[in-house]
Image 1: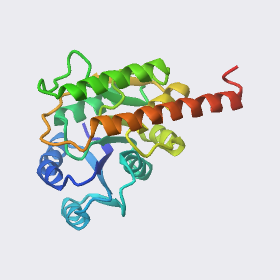
Image 2: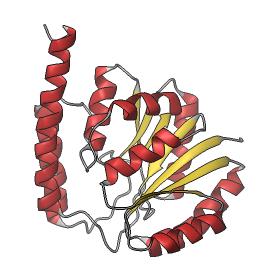
Image 3: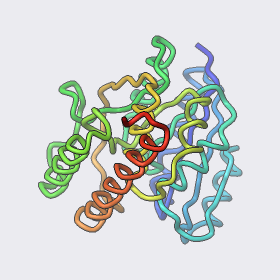
Image 4: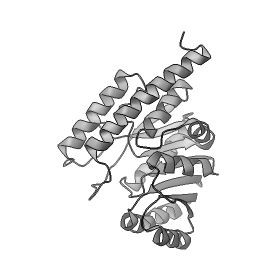
Length: 244
């Protein structure tokens, strides 16, 4: 089934993972007979020249922030530049089995969803069993905090693979402000506020040798940004009269 998809890959100092994963990704698209616009967004990495050269050889679009502005900023830059009818973002170190990509796009086709997102907490998801306890605890506490604020009903807001109808993606990311790791939460909170249908699916997560996520530092920053998102949402609802 031919597709036309924009795939946004935000990267920051993960050149080796990108180089290792891209050939398999492009081979999968060819096997599936998908027409894909791959957009690599370099968030101020130290290897910009190398990544740019790779993208040229892979026939991918290359966008760059000269200094690091955050994952949310990189994803927003890529989503807003997407031209295909469907746009997806996935972490540039390829943490998901490529069949997960296929399932997200297939689910978008089969439903009226505006957004399809991965859910690592789904019982059918395959997830590394040796995940550090501090990351498990951090994810659990963040999920509880988000639901306490009633920002979104989804248990796994931070799963690094999400798919949008491009019109929906442009609508949401043109409104979004978050540059850091809280951007997923803001996007899903906006989707809930605008009553955009969202479907979740299980994912297959590969073991990762390294991560740029610092659980306590980034976790605390994300909690603070959640409060800011909640506050801004309340102000907007009050100004429009929807909160009365």
